[in-house]
Length: 126
Image (cartoon, rainbow, N blue to C red):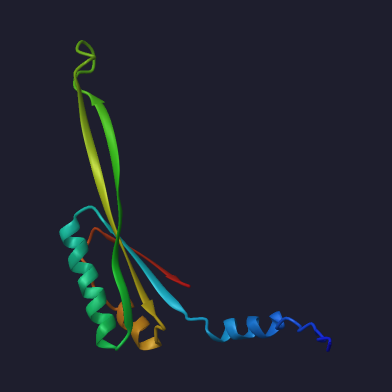
């Protein structure tokens, strides 16, 4: 009977896998928009997306994030009626927009946008 020879094959080197990952890295511009009124927020998000699409950028979003609700309880009376209270709340609506591979033209166009007051914008490069 003939005997079979078995040889161990070496595993692929991890260094080549790391170099492949580095070449596939995509830069991303993450814009986080916050406002108290959702109508104004949606209008400003639409304006940001239209500006990005005008320069042929790939846009992901808008992704709605959970609404942050801050509640405040206040006494109606200062002295006698301690059980009479009022509650007030502030709702902060949030959206996230990702722009893949932004060019300097897109960055300049987004900085020159005039958005309504009451809209907060945070920009991060990932």
